[in-house]
Length: 94
Image 1: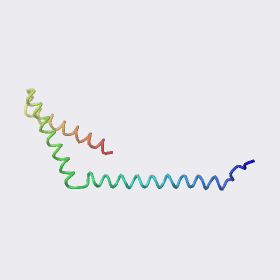
Image 2 (image 1 turned 30 degrees about the vertical axis):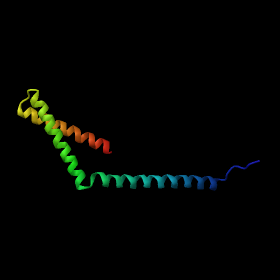
Image 3 (image 1 turned 90 degrees about the vertical axis):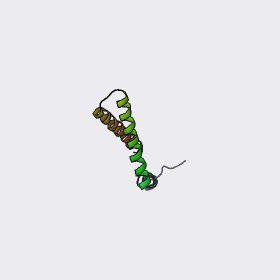
Image 4 (image 1 turned 45 degrees about the vertical axis):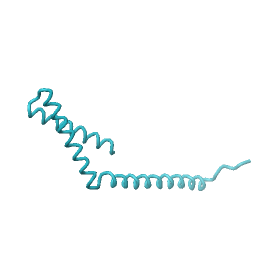
């Protein structure tokens, strides 16, 4: 015949489970912070993002200009493409 665990034993087991979950959460948070620092907080990565957004703006503007748009429409189309790219980058990085 087995006896049911007493209340302090169950509380200890629950506390150990919560402590393990907290350790994992802190570890995940530290890893995310390190990845963020490596990917976005360096000057090279910021430069890469700006360059990529600039190229997308120019490409979008060129496509609109080739399609027969005015200079203003081409510029707006380019800025719109750049904004889309930056929005996608932000979503992916979250």
